[in-house]
Image (cartoon, helix red, strand yellow):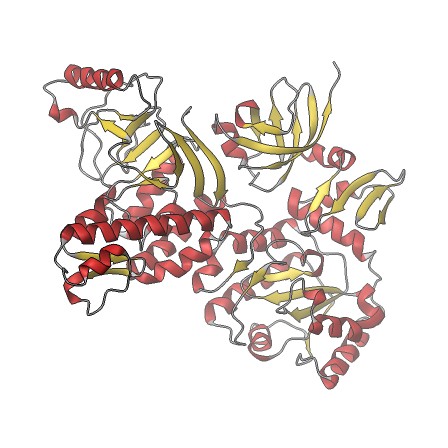
Length: 586
């Protein structure tokens, strides 16, 4: 646990934080030799006692200033355990510990962990395995430093992977060797007819292509510029989109992202439940994003469709939510009064399935995808897999498919038994839809109020199966965007971004399920709940989730700022922003 590093904002494994040394360092950042001192390898010393003495001398030499002190370490081969296990060093100042990749030894407590061999981890699988393994074995409120690894081209991916601190070692060394770096890759400076940069260093390089110091200065400038861009992508919550674009620079970087996406649990544990930004699905890797797989899993596992005899399959639209688009307004007119007798399911890429009740939920309400009318084999396989699982859980007597083109072909060839109308929004197409719906809904059971179905669906998606039933138990009514009980006390309301906000009364109905609960110590929190005050938290909580906060003296609601497992493991940072808190009288 650390006193000198704090995470301020998260976007997946990428984090904005602050490291409190002599100067406050905003992370992700580049460390310099002015920021730390290292005792080095134990083999520099004649004995372990001498190494321990060197560590103590290092600590004492920094007494007047907060520099990072990196403790002595025992070098080992890349996949070997250290031959010597050093005793832990106690200190009250910023402390760094060298972490051996792939080691099973539990690391000593520190503020910063230095990943050994980082500069030689060029193989994508080795790099991902080393960093993921390191992040999983160190506390979440500590920083990870990977020296001699960063370039302008790979910086965004390294930060997204979970590295907080980097340095300029590699680009400076490359500059001295005649290599020219930009975010688009690296070249031999002598092979460039024109320099694609107009910085002051490049202006001087025009006549001195072999000047290593100028090349190093240019490379460092490009690395610093890229760092600023990466920080901004974390603030704007779209670092994943930037990484998907940036990894196209080299095949190894593209492979690295694909290997990282196989570490689904690692990514999911660190990915917010929702973002303010639009989710752009521009590449094939977008199908593997946590937002996509999590939404699909919740639709299939948590969501329970209304008991309807008729299912209507519809295509998505460019405008979100779908019901605001021209095409879906035309569909609604064609369906007419039969909408109370059928259930609507929108088919789309990459989210696969979006029930009508969830069209305003992130990411369904805020995603964009290149529209070509073509569905590749991976998209088809993902859609059909999700549709099979959905229809296995939710049974319908009749299915009407108003799809067209390759989407209709994909569903039809998969063997879905439905009435296919051919899709479209012209007069004839809408007439076919209206006729098919009228026939399918003949004798079908009438559905409850669509607004109640929406509240039930949202509660299940956000709080797990059974939450909707608990929230809507007894007599309830809807006024505007608010759900009320029979005494007109509010239970929940729909927020402007389509999420569900509970009242204290609504939370009481959800609490017995035992989910999304943060247990705190014996105090009354105000404003923000800090991580040290958390005793326990549901491991399913993710940043952005609505949580129930309870303790001996307090009970209420808040919005999670970190994952549940992170609340328990951290000793710094805001665990949740509190919205409603009620003091419990003893």
